[in-house]
Amino acid sequence: MNERIMTMHPQGKQGVRIDRAKYDAIREAIIAVLREVGEATFGDLTAAVRGRLAGCFDGSVSWYVTTVKLDLEARGEIERVPGSRPQRLRLAAEE
Image 1: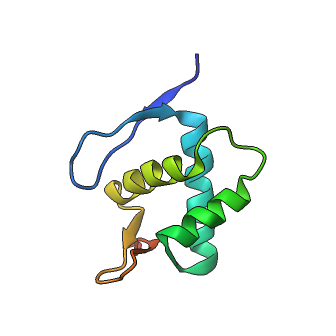
Image 2: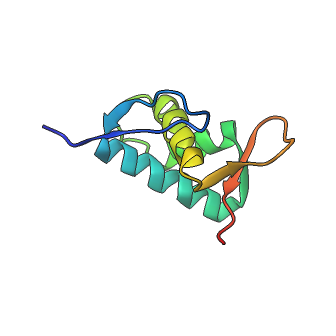
């Protein structure tokens, strides 16, 4: 049986249990994209992750990006750029 992880939500809502390998693949892709570009709209981030994982990911990339993005926000690894429309994301400032 595959290991699963319980995700977190930045607003304290209930997370979801997802496959750990899929979580790790999406997380690594999100972090890599944001390291490369600095900031990205949610749509651009999703497209970039989809491009990185093309042909080697089974499942809805957009659903997993949404779920993992929320988890990374809750854990303080990424953040929304305040006042941005559409929503822009960046790596959280390290202290």
